[in-house]
Image (cartoon, rainbow, N blue to C red; front, side):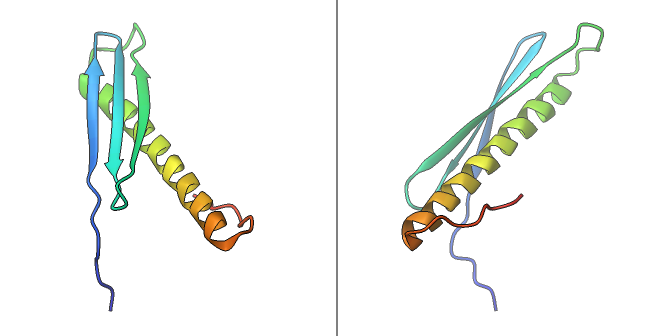
Length: 91
């Protein structure tokens, strides 16, 4: 039987103007550390102004970067605990 011992809350914040959307993703881990990542989207001048689409793209890019940082962090912790270089963690 699986038991849940922790929960993570990811925060996304957006900054926008007519052409650009920037996103910041943040997760606070149970060990007290924080991982923060950024994503951007730029609207092509011929596209209609749809802020939600810019948020989705910038948010997805920030979450993707956040995921990669978490994989790197986990990889470093495996190496540190084992004293050797571990195999790459694949997405």
